[in-house]
Image 1: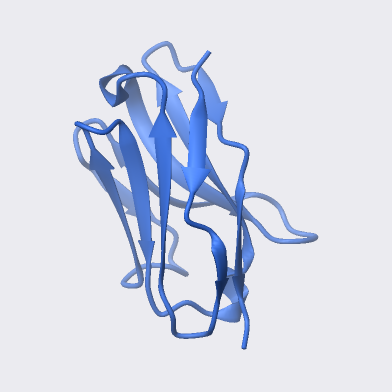
Image 2: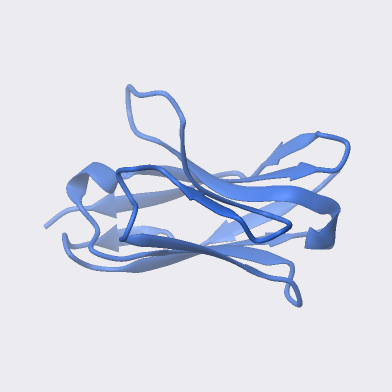
Length: 116
């Protein structure tokens, strides 16, 4: 069972920045994909950004040019740098990984609130 521990959420004003990190208990070389999803109240969970083991990234249109996903192989982490935050970015953000057996694992979620 993979353990995923997220950190970095919080309250930020519109236009501000936050960096989310997700530390995995397994080597990230075990995963074919790592990513971040979010779920706002009353809405479905949606993909924010993902990165494959080959380094290919994918972003939701709503966060392109504002968010950047990255992997740190040495620290077994995947991070999400979020800039120019908007109130509509407010949600619980979840780390997600998929291993080579196509098993999917989720973190516990971290709250991001963008408000003045």
